[in-house]
Length: 187
Image (tube, rainbow, N blue to C red):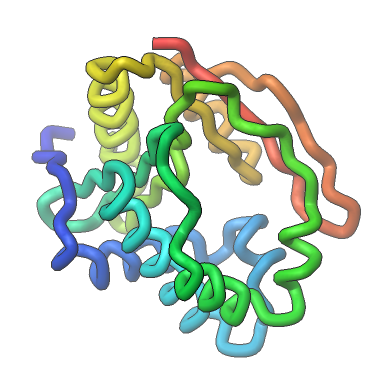
């Protein structure tokens, strides 16, 4: 698939959040962290909050048609602003405390955090996700920090990331929750 992948602007956030919400509708992690009550609305808003932070602090890549979106945060990025953290907690509702108390491995020191990637279902399986991953890894490799880490709670994503050179460094089994694979690539 040949498509233009570009850096997102603030004006792309709303539609990009919609793309991610559609892509993550049945994702194990989001199903676990977001209450069923108004799930779709909460999920889309949560994606918009995270993308707002990523546009400000890191790198958000999108296809021109916004059917594919990825966000990476450099190691020196700060936590979301207090107002955004409060909104995140509100969107997670009663599950927030459980989520924030869950212990996942720390990202390796001096590592980009590949925070998210999603592709609309009608564009899935056509190479768009791989194109975005390749562009993201290329951008990270040009920085002074040639390492990228991520987490996924979808087994088929593990295989996708492995095809791009990531290796599993940890597997976390969350009691009454999803399995989370931590992965790293040295560029």
